[in-house]
Image (cartoon, rainbow, N blue to C red):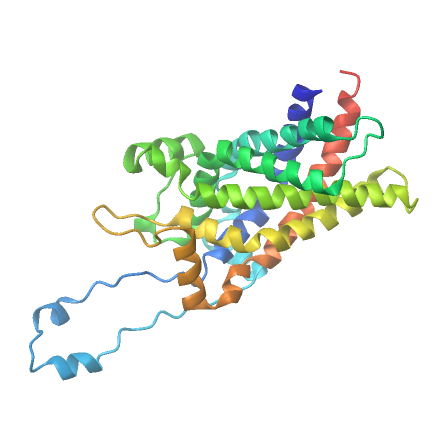
Length: 320
């Protein structure tokens, strides 16, 4: 049962991840909207003509404010299609496959293992508190395993929004991981890992526990039979719960993973808390829910495809 649960969860996660990848890419682009450069280079005229007599004039000079045009998911998607082409919607899909293979296979498999171990021996009941605990633990371990692929995926998805001269131009997930290791050190593969782990714990606990709990409630009340209708209803509700719970952490995770650290210069963000404070200070608290529409638009279908596929794979593999 243990190995099979990992296989079932991995297959379902890869199918769900690939089928909803464009929505995830749009979400990442929206989460990076409004991110301001944290330092400015002074023009030579300002740098070399400073004196006490010119101080009043200099003090009157205002640095130009960057105007950020905030657009919705449809506008972002159309802009990607117009400027980068259809294939850009699948930027980083190789990283998605690797991420789902590492992260989701681990979390889905471990959750089922914990479910078997922690269920009441006589009744088979698996209380909600244990579901949440199993989700938290499984999600955290899975995220730690899959973080390098997560960093690569975020960077590959965000690359197209950068000026051509600043793009990383990774050829694939292996190239991304190799270049990050060589240019930024092995530790860069786990950049934002605390955020990834926190997000994964929240997502897994809310998603898997909600799905099981809602599915059980539907079956217990006889509202629907154990079929596609029940699976779709329970999974979409679980996706909504997971999106609401995880979006703030997801925004911070995206920004920390995507930041560029210049040699000899302080990083734009010193950590998760610093990123959160700077984001709220410059863009307001609702910035933590940037990309929520594509998040729920992606999380809903992702969770539906995940659990419907999982239930079908279980049926196929039940005799193995």
